[in-house]
Image (cartoon, rainbow over all chains, first blue to last red; front, side):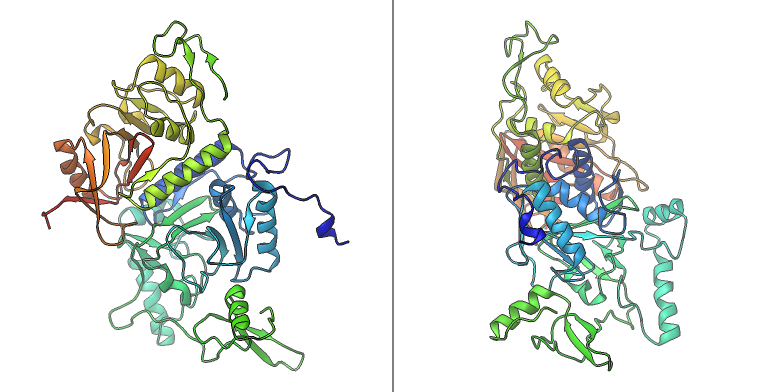
Length: 300
Length: 213
């Protein structure tokens, strides 16, 4: 008998929160505050709304912002998927999924299509999202101007004035130094033509998926105590210049496991001789393709 | 809360025989379900949503607005009630179940609850460019919401243009919304409630009338 199967089974359905804890771990007053702030975040797309951010049973940096957002959303009718860098089976994803199975009695899945609620670290799934789904991003650093202007009082003023010149200068410096915009992740975007937003460190490969996505995109930064949102169908534009349009960097390889040429690939060192394997970062997408091709499924 | 609770403030009141009506039967789960409906309504402005919760509100509140108050309000959220909502029964209900301060100055309120004619939106706090989230949310009880009608909505959350019918439609409303839109990101967010149905109209939504281009 494994440690996993000897644990007390979580009963299904409503009211199955672990005894001794409130439903979905957070107390009701905290959830109410986060819910009110989420509504304001949706009403002002791309604007960072300060929130209380509680101590969670894991350290900041492990997704406490995303977990608090998910805890304020999740209910017995949900189906929850959690990914970490695209994968359903990494430690952080497994722990967070189990956390909500225990504290909220919620059904969990690895299927992007089946999930009503998806919490993610650093990726947007390859399978297109549908209307009604909610994607919750774990955000380490919410402020897109932070490395250009360290003072919070000033960055707030810059957002108030929509003064984003320095962000363009930063991209221009990359062009001057490298001959192209070299930023391949955490690439800044303009939301609804008004707010500069940091899309959490997703690869710029995923930036086009932010634009007019039919799903609701919510962002939670636990340590920095900020929430922000992109409502469905909201235009999200990656910063660029007329003569240097935004371009997605694509690897010339195909996935070694499923043959996909349209997905974001991880480069994995395969042995001591230094040979390399390229595999989809989205484990569910890769497994699904392998299954359809009739191959025996290998986890990326 | 289950059952009726004696409240000294309303003892002898007429509407409920001095007894407070109950709040949510399952506070955590009912609030979660109501919030998700509301979040979807604010994320899809103009689309009519239905709250799935059985609630007996005080006489002057609709089931939908009572459920939203139970979902959103607490000691941190000053609430302003218009004259049409503010009888002693409603005040006692909100004080007891939500514990929210009831304020006379609408500018000081985080939430407004309107049961009569919509007051000028300028009566509520719009926030400012530095902190646009410090703005009021107004719950407005209307007679009817229809998914066809003269209003044409566009903006974040809407794929193209969405039609909305609304009664009553006060003359000052469209003009104020248009003026308010120029002040974006500051602005007041509206939740329209008819019975247990609701529509979200966040400040980001543009409202025009049909034929206006």
